[in-house]
Length: 285
Ligand code: CAA
Image (cartoon, rainbow, N blue to C red; front, side, top):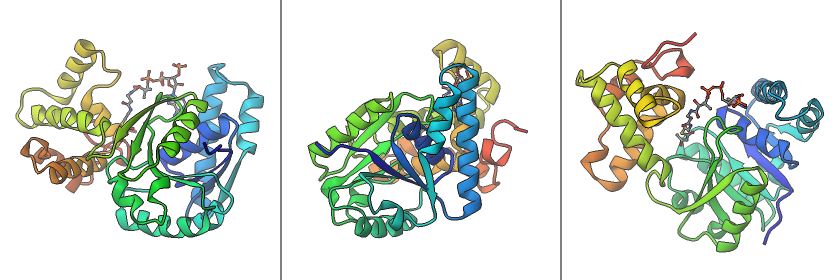
């Protein structure tokens, strides 16, 4: 089984910086790839802030934080950064053409036995794997936001993923203190196939005037013990991301039960995407 020591994380946004954070904190050497020096610095600052939060809560020591940050290098070149990596985790925006460009160059540059993984929440792992010359060493490694907190890594096997690669990624996830759950590639995998219809139904409740966002969320928080109500969670995930995933489910299964609520489409059209734009079902500072 392939042992993983050096990891390249491509993309330093919300998911990417969280993924780099957990790898570095667990002792892996990490190269974090961004498109500009400024974005790379922003990602490191975010990791610094989230590690400080853990120091303040006495979950880790100041020494752990300093050593973790020392284990992270940054790069602006995905191919160069993958040259001596054991595992490459891609966490760039959900755009197939962008991912295709990155995986083509990374596949050429990375060692032949390196594992290529995508953190995609909506694009088929089998389709991404087919971009490369190593579909048997390609896998989904789906983390959840906030990455330092959420225990799950959904390990998504493409049609050709070798079982040795699955085992290696599961072992790596365990070293991060996560719980890997292997599933087969299918639209939305398991996580979003179950989560997104619930969020969509909550939006339909608002759309049809059954309840306000606050009322719908209170029902789910107090009655079902959800840490966040589905509409607060939709804002947290990003309404554009929710819409993309629902469209993947709708197109993938050709089943009307996955049709996105018109209110969700309108909110995305209006640029009200949730936390990241300052407004969605709720307003944020
Ligand atoms: N880094 C490190 N620690 C963090 C953190 C971060 N980014 N964000 C929160 N935390 C820690 C806090 O320090 C706190 O730690 P303690 O328990 O030791 O005090 C803990 O997490 C809880 O945080 P808060 O007290 O600030 O806030 P909270 O109790 O309201 O919890 C939450 C916040 C963890 C986000 C919680 O509301 C929650 O679990 N929400 C649901 C999140 C969820 O469902 N995520 C999955 C989204 S789907 C996805 O990501 C994938 C996809 O494909 C769409």
